[in-house]
Image (cartoon, rainbow, N blue to C red):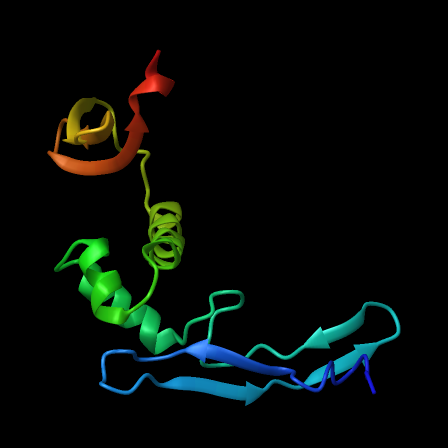
Length: 146
């Protein structure tokens, strides 16, 4: 029988955890829920995971370390995970880091666009011209430039 506070019979949260071992490790936990008259059902935030990520914080930290050393496609093969899931995690932390950065001292920028690979995929680099610090990198399909 369905219970709105406990959820369905299969209410365990499954998160991908370190997949670098010969045997995949998956963390499965019954995350408690509570009911509030005003707001309805609330689920407790697990301390080992970011909400909606599907990965443990340790796995996300490993992704960030690996992304500094190898391309995302190679990282996806190593972790046996689809690259779009990895990009989602990486972009979360990159966006978070950019939001914390202070851009008020930037007075001049230099913009450079170069081809990333065949198929009209271009990379746009934005640099702080005074300090030669990369400010932003963006992917741009050629058809959107016209």
